[in-house]
Length: 182
Image (spheres, rainbow, N blue to C red):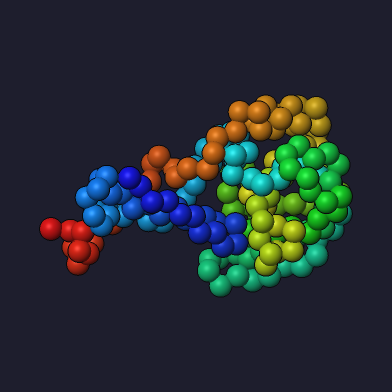
């Protein structure tokens, strides 16, 4: 048997599982701090609550974050085409960015483009009230070929995978002080 929980903050999720052989008492192994798998478009689509083709209207604000380097950029976007879920026509969404000396923003992950006003993106969001209408789980450019971008994400949504820990996660904690340990 395995207990499973998800904790999210500022667009990051940690998975915790407690592995217990059926009928044998307390957990024997705890897996912690495992980020969800995001290697494929199908992984991303499965985790995102909404996915939409959007046009970025303007940046609303930049917030310094305490947890890590960089901060959160809140952007106002107009939904051009919903692909998953039922987003409002206009959203204010936050995303993790690295602020550059010249006032521009850099990405924090390879498939996580900073939203720039006047450009189109396909964005996947997860709920997070601290950032108004949600947190950007992924953002991919859609300026050059809208048909290709929407086809790509429609296919990913059609084959989406339920959220699961990254299979490469090896954050296994064996706590000898636990009553479950011999």
